[in-house]
Image 1 (cartoon, helix red, strand yellow):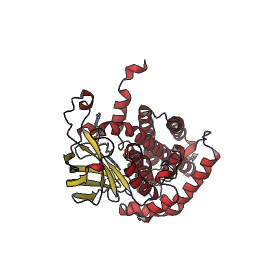
Image 2: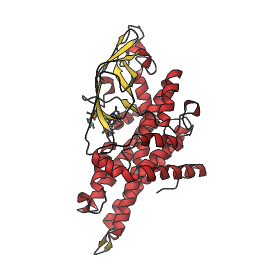
Image 3: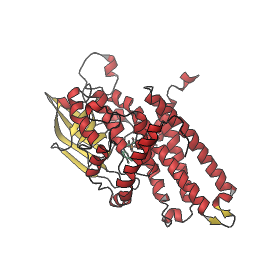
Image 4: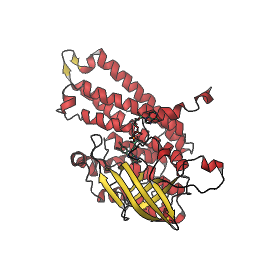
Length: 391
Ligand SMILES: Cc1cc2nc3c(=O)[nH]c(=O)nc-3n(C[C@H](O)[C@H](O)[C@H](O)COP(=O)(O)OP(=O)(O)OC[C@H]3O[C@@H](n4cnc5c(N)ncnc54)[C@H](O)[C@@H]3O)c2cc1C
């Protein structure tokens, strides 16, 4: 929808490859997965891995394609442009894998990264708990140390890839040793643990969802689940700091996806308004329709420029977590507005789906995006912190 001068010819070639893969292997089946609430074939992960679509930024030495962040964004955008929510590879590629790459010991990286990049393993990250996902400091799942083992107890909910995952990065509360170090004590005592999903003591339950029904989402319960202490990811008790640091990346990935969804929904809406015959000619001949669409298009254009600014900065090693919050907040707000007008301007067909417009589903899907990865209220909270420093 918008010209992006910074992308190079090789990016266009890569985008064509990604789009070809998704159009052949994912798009034809997506409605079926949505109707069944999931059920993607496991082989799809391996096919995507073989096509270089997984863990794009993981270096070749760890079995990844060794691509750059803009290529990773191209994959995420191709998913959003196609309304694909059931095979969100960006979760595995750009959220789970970076935790392992940045925090893992050499043996953890050599074990898990080739598996994640090839699609032989599927990964998940489990932070959210039933009592509330916004308050990460309030995580109640416990990780008790018993010699060389850790025993996990607690429940994680609304976890993407919950039913498919082979490995789950679990955020759990640990007990701080009395180190006498006040800086460490000021952080909630949370650790990250890599848990193989087949371990005894783990039960998984799928969650039926109105929004993004094709996406594998579930609840994972840990009951005296024993894992080796060697499965700790990064330093013990440092999980809260890690989560806060990585949430910046996660939010930029989610903003990138949401922006592509917004552009796709707006493009379809403009086309449908143009095609709808009315007494005035088409819906676009009504000033009200044009004004609303002009506002949405303007918001989309500004959001695109800001998301691209964040992506270019991140590509250059200058990620800005607060800018990622601004991007996620603005883009998901615009997305929800476009989705709402998508129903309104299609009239009854936007509700019954008689035109196949999927407008009602778009509204439910877009609602997910201002909730996951931190709700819009949390984005405002983060943006609002330290506002005086901008004076
Ligand atoms: C499809 C889907 C996939 C997901 N995948 C994952 C995943 O893979 N891993 C994972 O860990 N989680 C995942 N989540 C969970 C998601 O991150 C949480 O839903 C999100 O963080 C919000 O937590 P919550 O739903 O418990 O809402 P709550 O924290 O209960 O918040 C509900 C509402 O309360 C208000 N509120 C809460 N706190 C504040 C505050 N501090 N200030 C102002 N208002 C506030 C806001 O209005 C907010 O929208 C997923 C969610 C969905 C829907």
